[in-house]
Amino acid sequence: MAEREIWPALQHELAAGRAGALLVVSEHRGSSPGRQGMLMAVSRHGPLAGTIGGGQAETTLVAAAQAALQAENLQPWRQTLIHHTTDSNASGMICGGQQTVVVGFWQPGQALPATGEPWSIIGDGWAYHHTPPRKFTACLIGGGHVSLALSRLLDRLDFRVQVFEERPGIATFVANTAAHEKHHTPYGSLADQVPEGDRVFVAIMTHSHERDAVALRALVGRPFGYLGLLGSRHKLKSLLAGEAQPDFLRAPMGLPIGSHTAEEIAVSIAAEMVAVRHAVAGNGG
Image (cartoon, rainbow, N blue to C red; front, side, top):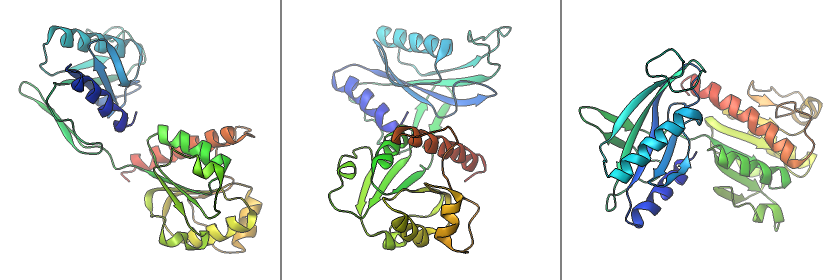
């Protein structure tokens, strides 16, 4: 769940004169459903936005946060839940991992942090400091139907989405409200506009073989965490015509799930991007 949905949910409570709770997974081990950095906003009436992994562990902590809000007992606390039936801190789940959750509170009149800014929860003799991770950026080259479907998925998956289209008046490009940035630019000039680095994922999906070639040649020599192309490896070889192919270049991009529709293709690409994102983040990128 993106922070940009958590803070507005809490702000709505504060603006109405009600305190709100923020639950954050501060650490996890093993097969815990809650992963470090997961966030959830809770009101006195129940969940507002986000998740800390679901299941009985989440239900228990949400109920505890609700009770604290209703009793106006707003002292932060933290709790470690063991997902094993034999432990004294058993969460009611049996996945074998564990997670520590910090519960903090904001009251009316308190300023909430801006999305992407660091923030802290200060307890009795302890403190939790949260620094949001540097986001991954997905640059989609082409503004057609697959681009629109993929933008919507990647936005929900907490990528920063940029879409590049060179044709004027494309309805799917105009209708794409999931993209954080939209650029109307010739594909031959992409090298000047697309960022680079291991947290930049590029997906080429233009309207024609010829324009794919223009976009690919503009970008293929630059470092990315992911560079993908719709179409076969045979198509890739014909586009590059003997040029060297970087290891991170994928064609066809996406996992092989037998996809046909724009939405299915978007799912296959998004799944592959998520897998690569975890690999990059796990390597310290």
